[in-house]
Image (cartoon, rainbow, N blue to C red; front, side, top):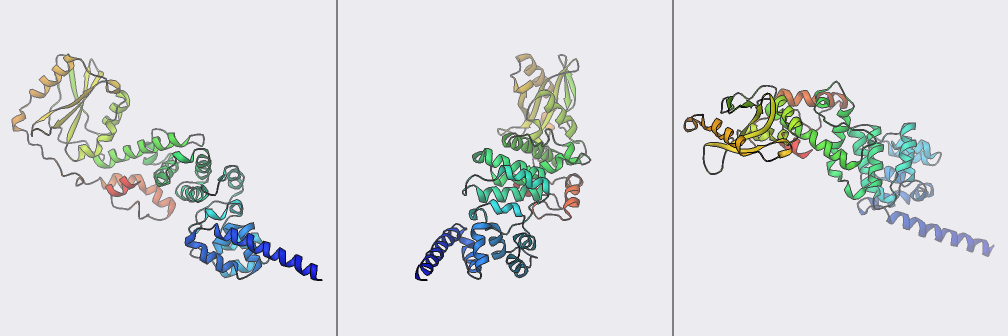
Length: 374
């Protein structure tokens, strides 16, 4: 009898040590709530080892979850308890370190469960970032994109910035929506085979295109400062619309699409230099820092190649063929040029409708701050 009690005592002591070890692995901000719940019943305490996510979800429930009912389910079935707590069973394999905030937005269909099992975080240190990122991309985009980011976080965690996932999630969602304006602005669409570096670059390029379109709208730039002309066989063609600018950027392989805000603030104007109908150079005219008169700010060929003297000479002759003295260029203070409201709404409306809400970070009114924050 004494030996039986001794064995039971040792078993209980070992169990207490293991429980304490598991509880200490939870984030300090939630550890008190988790510990208090674990002390209420041995079956709840057992969750610290068998299902850390469920213990966390019961201790830190999200809005709308009947946690008391879920706790009662633990006594009967973990599956019932997980369903009542609103968390997927596949979270059972994640360590306590993964859970720092209420668990929301995670898919739980059969295909997702099979796929996500291959990309679980290999270390407790990575687990919280991994879970937060998977949940964010699932909510922003869709299940396949969530599986993809899970894989990429495991494959190359140092290269992944969680703060940039909002833009990546939007880009991934629009990549699968061919009937939207946002889709037409994507040069390279999301695919599950992409690596994170390529995805970030493609998402950034998409945001640049959005900035160009919402800066200029659907109308042509009315005041190009200068007039089209021909000098020494070189034609100077205005790039006065988003279509013209995008086509020039693609043909000349340059960064012309980034000039949307610059043009909207009346800082410069863009021209295409052509000979016999062929693109030769891209010209940017701007009022330089040293004075109020417009001058040649940039004149480059394909992939920003240096232009020969005769092209520069033709550009100077064309520029100075205008009455520059009478030209008044009123630059806007940076950040004050309004974005085009119809274009902004046309881009984001399909996403708002699909999500049945207008997120605070993607407002109804055009916002440079919101666009830059993506």
